[in-house]
Length: 635
Image (cartoon, rainbow, N blue to C red; front, side, top):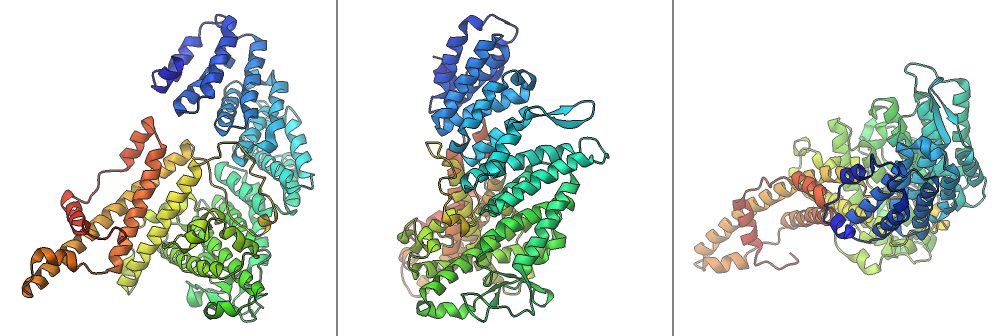
């Protein structure tokens, strides 16, 4: 009965709280029954509202039941959900633990011995779940002293587990330590600014610097990209003291310049690729003096995107969101092999073919991270360059498709890229689906591109730009759809994200997708509002084209003395622009459909509000439908 009412939305959080509150001691005799009810509700696979209500039962019981044995039993029951390693149960258990620590920290301190058992499951949790564990333990182990306004260590378990994992030679264990270090950094460096205008004490700065130094040293064992991505996330989600941010920026900038940048006059060798490297996609032309060297730095190129992501994130924090001090990186060229080398690709040795695939793969990921950084910058010149970089991605990824097909699977990268199926690699479209899981994900800010106004006036050849924009738009929309699907498809079993840490970690530079939580859903809803704007534009342009084509066909057939009805079926031209617009239309609808299928209840109403009524009127939609109704489905 309770499950059915919870599924129907008849039980609210307010109802549950009011039921428990004010009845001190009354529910203690029924504690075991209440825990049994919570267990059944949390283990219910669908709908989500039932599990959410089960979580509320646990939260209310922990706060309102007076019996210490019952509270310990509640913690034990949540640990049982955690040990099931069923993703949905684990998420609920961690969320309940987080609420308990956030709302009743002093009470939780009395049961710290029980809470400590959560650490036993760390290596079986996913990365996002490990972050949640360290977040709640940070709140338990550190406490703000109201007199000194300084964070003080209450329990040493967090520090012990981080040091232990960082000191382990296994990359798997080190990553757990790096996640813990990042959370310790967010706590300690965030707490430095608790007194407005006050300089942090030397001891506090030394503690933060020690955490940062230990983690950076440990990461050199093969986890540098992972550590840079963790630091980037902490900088994005937390406000750290400017002194710490500046130290991160200086260190990262120095490393980036030394490893990845060359002055243009320098004529360095191209490694195993070629003795005469060539500059690709120089958007700044004569104004640039630097280039990103990928051809001669294949061994460190996997770390290029994550290193840049950290550098630009720190730069934003130090300059109120502006990236003007590093915007030369958006337009500077990439040093690769001569593009003509692809014309005789089959004549290259197996080693050279593999190196070429690596170089193209790293170039695509560099362009993706460039768009992540600069897509939300307001300068028109940067917006124009971001659009060009999207076109560059389509160009380079198409060459990568060709090279992967011609390269034997003895190359590790090619073996991974072919894992999704050779047939899918041949599938038409600018975004190659089997490659997608191994690429840097687009950030939510990258989809700001969908909000750009048309910039055709800045380019001489309007038709070329329009065709390229349609292809780029299709690529971006397909990426949006696939990223939403990726966020929506956790494993039914909660397997560790570290099981895949093998030699491939040294060659790949992909980034993990965030969870499709409330914050992510809000951002996706906002993006889909821009997607609908493009749907409107596509419908109107197709309607204009259909009306003009219909008029021309009618006139031509009348002049030839043929029946008009036959003309409309027989004379539909093979128009490339129309095909491109149709592909954009389908990609946009796919992104909307995937999200609509994933949200329910009140959030579905919010999403439908973002998908505002189409500006394209019913007459335009009717013209498009009538014209294409009899066409071949593939066209």
